[in-house]
Length: 261
Length: 284
Image 1 (cartoon, rainbow over the protein chains, first blue to last red):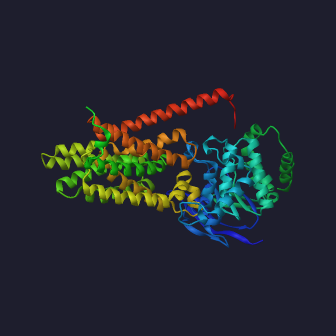
Image 2: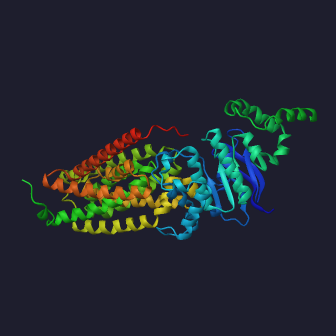
Image 3: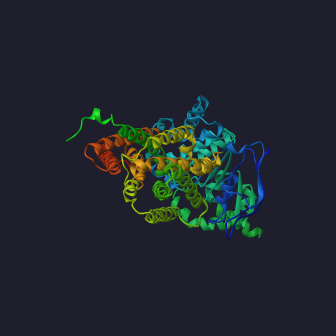
């Protein structure tokens, strides 16, 4: 596998504090990375810097065989979109703009790309519907289709599930997995849900301003970072997920860790 | 006693007012959609007050009004944009401050020279008689620039309005299009000011968009519908204002208000009908 995106000593500073501190990591093609960490640990800042919305105060982001326009991005939802009059197909088509020139009309190729993305996301029947009338899960699918119009290579998502309920969240994660496995699209996702993150992703990036862990989920289970994250999330999690699946492993692993230490 | 409509349009000043009015109403309706959706509605209002200040200045200096007003209002638009992006102040506060300061300075400037009160009144509330031959030609050129730029930037502008972070991340230069939007708004405000009055030009920007958003589902629908209601309100308002000797700007804004209320009522009734024909669905 080859590296498609790399950061070297990436530091992002807001006026009075450092949000990302000296981050260096390499994102490989075909990988599925979940960025985890506590609130305020700089996850969103990192993602915004990677897509070019924020300028690093030091260090750099290097793209290998990838242009800035080829990154599909799903930002955190903004309040403007709540009452926005636009149809689903109009929204999805905006994902194609990066490729086109200065024209008031979309080309056939762009329209076809939007059509394909909508079919892939299973939202073709909604194409004439108004975006503001959709449910939260449908909206995320539309935005994902838009991001897919912009990229065939890399999707960067900032807490895509933060506004969704658990069932819809599960759907969304299976879509992402499908995109990663069958379409070979590299995924980099900020997640506040530690359990889904370790279940879905191939690689975990744990940060608290600086990089604390970057590697496989299996290795991550062994770390104290993971124990702390699970402890933090647990109260929240048991309330949300009454149907737990496969998480019985965790207590044993905790014990194993205890012995190892 | 009402005059019949065919003779109405034979007056040269009415023709000029119509040409300028229709052009301005098309431009303002288009720009208004982006301004309203991006929560920049107050920018038109702020710019019109700056326009008043600069017209007052031109009056005192004895200069061509639009030649002074256009550069000053454009500068003010860029300044507001800059304040919004880099300022320590909130956007709405900076606009409010700028607009009231410009108004105050405009009034102060005119008080230095006595006997100008009649013109001042027409600047504030607009006049059907205020549109001169040269004003009309400047309006035609400026509107052509606004329309062409708007059409060319239609899709990127929509993308930025809908989701600026996404647009910026996928290679659309948001700051460039924001600059274009402010520039076009400044031009439209200045051109529309003579007819509508500085106090009543900003409703021309926000009303058509708000009216269209009551009933339209698609962005394209909103664009078409807001241009249509804007032009219709302007022509109706102009005719009514002439027939009954009403103040032009105020009549046009009131017609716009009637359209808005009508569309709101329609959308409300449609919602009621739908709810009664379909049982309430709870969707997540």
